[in-house]
Image (cartoon, rainbow, N blue to C red; front, side, top):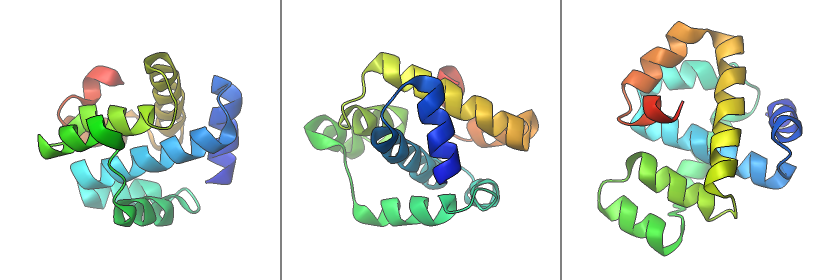
Length: 128
């Protein structure tokens, strides 16, 4: 996981701490909203990623007031955005980070695997 965080932080120019927190939240979101078996299989191939996502799920982070409201309304991609923005990331940062992360995941695991996961999560394909 550390290698992935360093790579994405270097690619995006974002602080490694915020990058690591964001990636962990994204992975936890994928586990919650996507096909768990597919997501777990993907995350298990990145040392520490599955464990970090599981730990984040258990922490109950809601992303501030806006994130709490979005979670009450059903969550989804908007709740994830609120959680990530609560880390101090802008919408531009979210796009940059998301593009870099999913580009890396496509290179590692292939287009088909990510398409199967993103197809199961409403709205995710629009931000990829």
